[in-house]
Every structure is written in C-alpha cells, then in structure tokens.
Length: 202
Ligand SMILES: [Zn+2]
Image 1 (tube, rainbow, N blue to C red):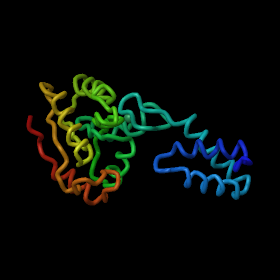
Image 2: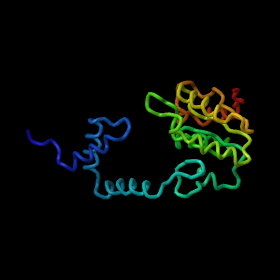
Image 3: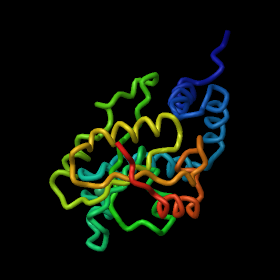
Image 4: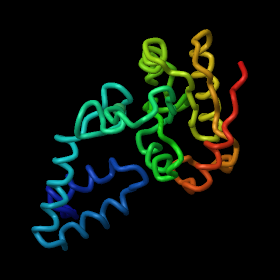
C-alpha cells in the first residue's frame, strides 16, 4: 500500500497530535489547512511558536509566564505586596486581572493535586509559596484554585502547608459555579467571588 502522507506531513500531524484535544482526525485536518495557507502565513505560525519558546520564561517569583523576570505584576510597585492570590495555572491569572478587582500579587502552583494523573504535592510550587510568605510582609493568601474536587483538595493541602505562618488564608466565595473551571468564569462572577472570600478554617 502506498504511503498516504508524505514524510513531512506525517511528522507535522504527529506533532499537532501532541496538542490537547487534538486527535488523529483533527491533526490531519489542521495539517491540510496549514498546507493551504500562504507561505507567509504558515511561516508566521512557526515563527510565533519559536518566539514564545525563546522569549517567554517563568517568573522566578510567582511562576507566571512573562518576557521579563520578575514579571510585570511582581515588578509593579503599585501592586499590594501584602496579598498573594494562589492559582493552579498561569492562565488563571487572566480572568482575575480582567475582573479588575484584584491589586495584589499571584503565585502559580503549576498544577493541582490529582494523584490519578500523577500530580503529587511535590509537583506543585508550594515550597516557593512558603518561602514568600515566610520572608515577606504577606498578610493574606487567597486560595483561588478551581472549585472542583481536585481544586478543593489542592486548596486544603496548601492551607495545611501554611499552618503556623502569620498570614490569614482565605478561599474564594462559591460564586464560581461548582465544577466549572476558573479560567472560563465570567470576570464579574470572579469579582464577586473575590469580594466574598472567607477565611479558610483549619
Ligand atoms: Zn511574577
């Protein structure tokens, strides 16, 4: 049987298949779409991928992605250094910033506790968070992990890790509908959830 795809097309499909939610059929569709793009468009796509990989780094303070270290939020003197909002993923920062009702700093955990997916406590950046809370003038840590089972378990774990430190630990109000992902939440709902945050009991 003749090879259905050229070698380079096969390679492109294989790489596209690494993207989340992209199965074999979608990878094929995307690869053919890329072939139909103009050369400029297709190369602009490959350049954009190269550029983010070369320029974007993780902030050494909060783990947010940025082109400078520390990131613009950590470096901004107008931000309230007494408050740290803890999120699972770097992209969770976006809707919180869009809500316009938060002026503190962030800490990105780079994941959440999900033992079935192999995510254990040591895979999260909790140590970095503890160092920040121990060394700074942090008065409040807001746990803004997702309002689903793994997010709640992660919040509980971080709450326990912060035990004995002087900062108050709060959790977003349940205004964010249960089971939904924080990054899909409406900024207005997030503003309410931030406003209504409550101290998290041990
Ligand atoms: Zn930062």
